[in-house]
Structures are given as structure tokens and as C-alpha cells.
Length: 293
Image 1 (cartoon, rainbow, N blue to C red):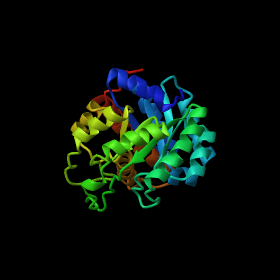
Image 2 (spheres, helix red, strand yellow):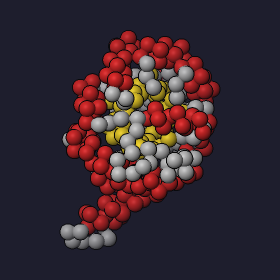
Image 3 (cartoon, helix red, strand yellow):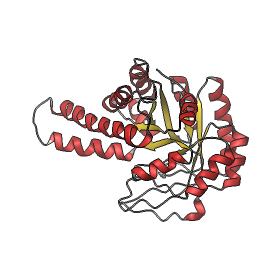
């Protein structure tokens, strides 16, 4: 069943577990994400960012995702991730997304600018007003999360971490439901050992803002680090690149095995199955969300 993310956050907070955000970009991966949640009886969210949704079409993507989500009694949110396009966010809300993120603080992928603090507040506050009127959860970002390029950190230093006092002010002025801060997390596959985030800052951010936090850039983190994030109050764990890599690797392996018209279909099904296995593993071993619904 489709729920807003606040519904999931409240239970995760009460019972101390994390909710996995599964990036899904087509029919195969959307189905795999929902099946993982159903098989594990685990709350979850299906997520996509603007690039994928635009390629398929907002209405088409939403219709595919909602057809799977609404066919089950497991609570699942449909999430627009890391978007700075105001108009696009509103269109996704109208299409049935139950959770949207305004990414005014980070601009990690170079396709959006880091907004001035006051402008970030202004835009986010307006989105919150519109979204909350139709029971849609809103997340926003503050601070910069670097993108690993060629497996290495791109040089962003400690000064770009989220400021504690500013975060508290931002949450109060915007009314957001969940904050995506920078605590030393890194987007992409960081091939060296993921640096240890500032867990003291992480804990203080949750305590001072009074809202749950989201850990973005989790693909390169160890299981232990993800568990640590959950233990200090980060209830939403974003993983995208890891799923992309699992899918890509399996797809190439399967395509090389066969010839004929059925090859793409069979290969996509096999890749989605490996994708689902990782989602289930994380639900069981890391998020501890299996069996929570």
C-alpha cells in the first residue's frame, strides 16, 4: 500500500530500525524492490531521481510504480529523490508520489546549483506548504555531499559539513519532515575504505533539529557504518549506485551467455533478481526492518 514517508518514520523511530530507500529506474527494478519489501514484510521506499523519471515520463513512471505498490498490503512510499526543479517536484506530487526531496543544499551531481541559504529556505518552505496540504512527506538538504569520481573522493573537506545551528534554524523555518545533512558521507562507489563520518555531529543534528535524518551516499559505506547511522537516529538510508552496479554487472554477464530475441528480457530479469537479493540482505542484516509490518 502507498504511504507517505512520515508513516514509516514514526514506526522506525518507535522500534529503532532503518528504512531502506531503493533506487529503481524501470519495470524490472521497481518490481524487484516491491517484491523484496513484500517477501521480508519490510517497510521501504521506491526511489528515482529526475533524470530517470524524465526519460520514462512522470505519469508512466508513477503508474508503473503505483501499480506494484498498491497491489500489496506492505507500506511503501514512492520517492522523488534529490530534485531542485520546483515545477518537476509539483508534477510528481500531482502524479501520486508520496515523498519528495528538495535538494537545495547539496547539488552533488553538478546538475543543480547550491542555493543561497535564504533561497533554500524560501523554496523549501513553499514546497512543504504544497506537499503537506496533500499528505506528502518532504525532505531537504543542507551541506554538501561529495561525489566519488573514479573511485576517489573529489576533495570536499570538513568545512562543507552541515552546520548544527543552521540546521536547527532551517528545520524550524521550513517545516520539513526529514533532513539530509553532510556528515562525511560520499555519493557513488568510493573504492577505498569509506572514511568514518562525524557520528558526534550526526547525533547532535538529530537531537537539535528534532527530525529524523537521511544518510545519502550510502553505497560505499560498510554494513557497520550503516548500522551506526541508524543507531544515532538516521532512519532513512539512501542507496542507489550499489544497486546500479549490481544490476549492470549481472546484466553484462547474462547477455554474454546467450543469443536471440529473448536475451534482453531474460538478462534484465536475472539482473533484477540479484538487485532484489541485495535489498533483502540489507533489510535483514543492516536496517533490521524485516518483519516490521
